[in-house]
Length: 272
Image 1 (tube, rainbow, N blue to C red):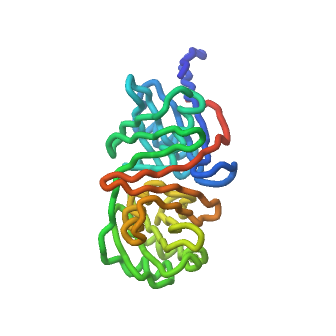
Image 2: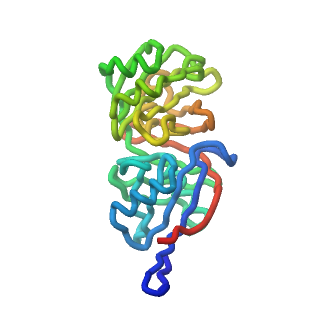
């Protein structure tokens, strides 16, 4: 993060990467910004950078002796956990900062998160957030315009439907859903998959990006649910957003493994 004197101003340059996560193709998966810091900046500056980036998530990563601190910001708020931006951050570290690392350790507000590097595959070790049966606001049911067979909740509402076709064709009423504030959660809809184990989509009321392309953190709840429902520990999942994303999943009790690939879209610098 070089600092130079320009007249009466100090210029700070922050390395910036934009990564498409949970895909091996540009313009697919979920884009995330990754900023590498030498020291933490004020929270309002971090939030302004995330707002300026205008992506679902911006990850800020600061090296430590034994790993990296990580924080995640949407254009509106700081999040307690984000899967695709963690995957993107591990991709940046493994491809550009320290290619010899067999794994990357992150320290976050959700505890220690390890990401194993196996060639192009990045395997994240995340906390399990098993959802439990729940009531749901009528506005959410009105917005999705389909009747779930089951409703659960952890951080997010999880609505289970009868078929992949229902999930694929769902067109929630954003104006209705935006009447609810679920920060920092959202609404996840899911069903058993036709060619994979399960599929999902994820919607965030009042957020800058209404439908999240691929939501790693939601799989902290989807994995334990579908593992029990399908009686399987290893599963393949698809998120059926317009961009789409592929996730390899494993239930490990109190932890879940979420694996995927990532590709670099751009490298540059932020000048402050």
